[in-house]
Image (cartoon, rainbow, N blue to C red):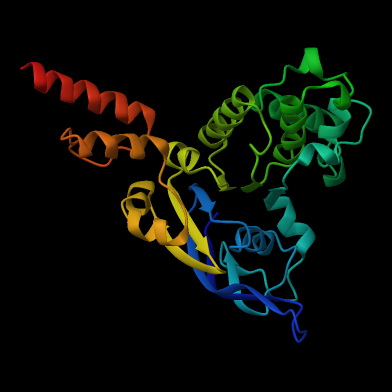
Length: 286
């Protein structure tokens, strides 16, 4: 789905002494099938922005046009919008409530008027996408799962609704390194298979470099930078002004450059660093 956000303004506690402008004239576009990362410090406006895309919050001014429909219009049925735009909050595992994983994942689809066969198919597909075996985990209580498994089960409940846009707010927060990596791999797998838009909110600059097509950097309610990871991370001085660091790999490559070992282009990921270092070593031995 194409998403066009135009001049969006949102003010909390409007008219009160502690009035705060959370979004200040924000304009961005997200193309059909893109994997987009939104990054910024706490209070930069990230969560406020994504809650507008899902229709949870209404702007004070501005528009959000999704597939040609302005969702800020009063005539738009938000219940229909949320079938197409799924939002996964931080720590979604706290919203698990059913007696089995299957029933929890089936809860949303069961409200869509689908047949039992279609609901079961969606549950099986969603569990497969998040890496939970249906036969092994389906009948278990969600509260008997590990932390990472609980989160995947909760995300599966949103995936089973088959949204055209999936928004995730810090989906790796609090996970151990193994679960963190599994979560990112799951999101990449989901994007490749379903080709839905994915909007990922994160503080992790390394993750953004490795899996997104586009990055939106928020700062004090404004869009500070937007572009491909290479376009954004090449503006190191601007990121530093905002208080954001480049991925660790870029910092390592800068140390090599300071020692006279300069790479040919911008290196952002471990795979790129490995390739570039091997290339530099071959040149040295030649």
